[in-house]
Length: 123
Image (cartoon, rainbow, N blue to C red; front, top):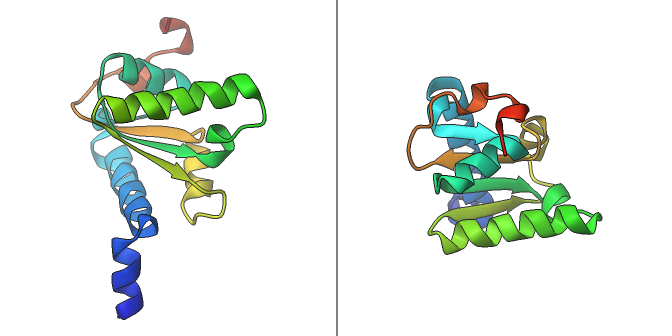
């Protein structure tokens, strides 16, 4: 039981709870989540991101431009009062996050239709 309390209070526990919240919303309240680079960028432009979830494969990417893009996104979300969680490749939720392109967000408010937009609809 003591181990569970330690996990619950750790970053690992926060990451697991946050991913579960994201996944529940994907299934039940999809207007409050988005995933994929274009959709997350659009939500960020609207200042809609409450919590950003990103894999360290993107955050620490070997390609400099990709890494700069995601480091900047994390910094900007935090500066805007949001939270940003970087998921280690060793994290239990990372394979599921990778299925969502490695970047996803829980939104402050619903954005109906955001996931229905084609990539061509984005700037």
